Image (cartoon, rainbow, N blue to C red; front, side):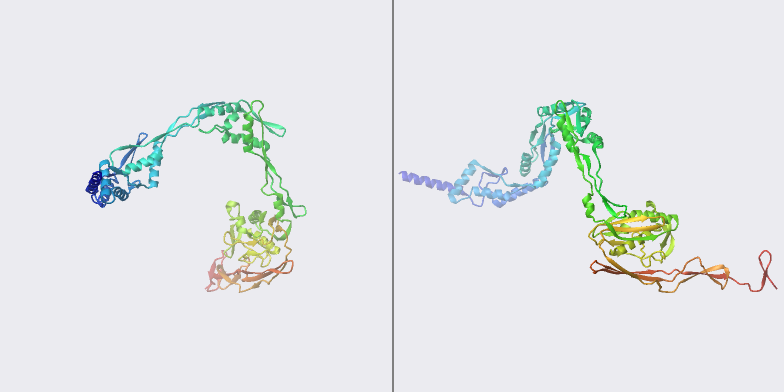
Length: 585
């Protein structure tokens, strides 16, 4: 009988299970997603319904409130998306199973109900930007307790607490609200209290230190002398801690002024080592001299340490060595000790030309050339302009002698070229003058014109070179000092020779009778000329280092001939006493 009852109970249970099993393709009744009932719907229909509703609400804003400020955002703005398909799949799994098992599961869901939370995503960058914008309007950071100094008396201003947006919780709240189907309501965002972390009590000891510091002068010892810093000077120098800080420091414009005065007492600038010419005319190293300078940071620390000690308050002026930019060892290592090459030319002319020669020579003088470096005349002197003090003097322009700014500069470039020539250095750029100039060494002149025509030579020795210019009353000597590479130099020059006829420039002259010609003896003339210089540079062992030829071509200077254009009288004539021509009949 008991068995029959059990069998009957099982049969009833199976019957109930089958009764509520429904279709496996439908979602169990009693299931909701995001508050929307989808029981009895197919999975596809449920997904479509949820997606359509979500799309309709994507551009409808939700209002959020924080600290009395209102903000509106939409799901599309913050990139909030919902995984409706995943939620529907989870809802289906809750009522799945075979036959009566599925029926019992669905019966439980129908009686108890279930709300499935769908997965939510958002664009984190957009959400972070929204939180930052809200925080900028909502946040009221706390004001820490601070020390103020009125005269020589310090006091404490108590801090005040603040508030800040709880961005972590706010982010979750915003994303959840925008993922839901609720609109038209206001969502409150949480704030956190931002408490005062630097309290009045924590600054009490700092105020006591300040009172001690400003109670009396601080004496700073230097050698056998003392310098005093008064309490008022201390008050102006001490940087009262920023709100939230407890550290006392010395700084600011007032400290700069006080340290400037102290520096005048102790500072001694360092002297760089340099090269100077001795009585024998050879380079000698003038040693560097260390200086001293006030160590401001260490002296400030010494002042602070002395000022917090009651009673005798003595610190010290801390001195640091001022090291020269160029030491004796460094200058000695440059190897500038003897003449490598030298050349002298004589000069004359008008006062403006002599002025220009001296001026450009001063720009070239005292220049150093590192090993491997190339010396450039134009780069060293820059543009020779009136702004630099150059004057108008005779200069060759387009092959003609004219007047221009900087006339006479080529005297210096020619002299320097020959000094480099005699030094055996590689000359990488040189141009002869357009016209032959007899007082320069034949074939060894060098013209310059900023910025296009330059004189350049390279220091191919293993030591530095030092270029010096020595200006006399009528002569200029350029000397290159260094360590002589002991090179042997052989050079030869081809004779100056004409490479064409003298051109003639005829000038009509109404004062000369027609048919007469007179050569203008005041204007020099010359055919086109040419020459060349051959230089061979040998190493001490006899090896050929450089075998160079510099060819020079000089433009012709035309012979100026005056050609008469005055007509001859047709008949014999006589002149009266006034000089008029009288025709005879």
